[in-house]
Image 1 (cartoon, one colour):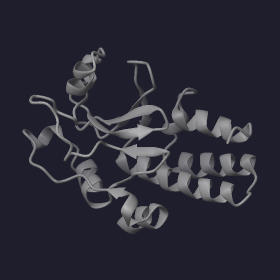
Image 2: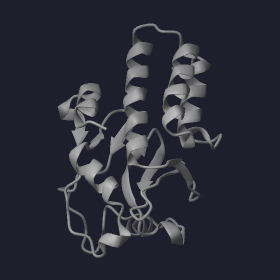
Image 3: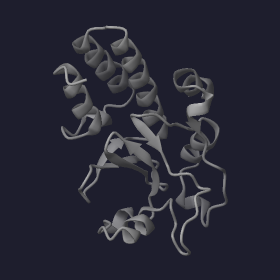
Image 4: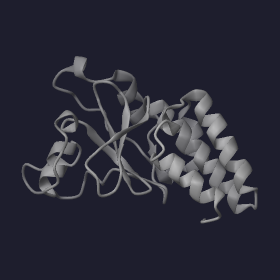
Length: 183
């Protein structure tokens, strides 16, 4: 994954970089995920909204990154296994989180506390977001929605089939809407 790929797709002004910060136990964190988040970044767009601005003032004791703190703050039950996961942003209406130990990306569909594996790792998420940006541009230029959806499935699925494993994943739902002309 080359940092320029994300910048080319979204523009420099729409890339959010995660700061490198010390972690309590480096053995509990996927180093590749941290490297990609701090050197390649994540896009900030209508489809994927990156994590909230760390400069925003938060009340004492509120950790805006970990899911446990966030869910507690909003009075939402947080599955125990995901309390230490990090909020990356929102894909459409799903909260997207990173399990820092495994490097896997999870989605919490809107209004639910269950989660589904969305990507095997950060690189897979980034590749899918770049391909989706290409799909959006081609759609805006009048390309056939069926062909766009199929190309996206093939390209992303060849790298990581995980995004399409659950019928309710945001990727499957978005492609279904595209194919049915709801865009």
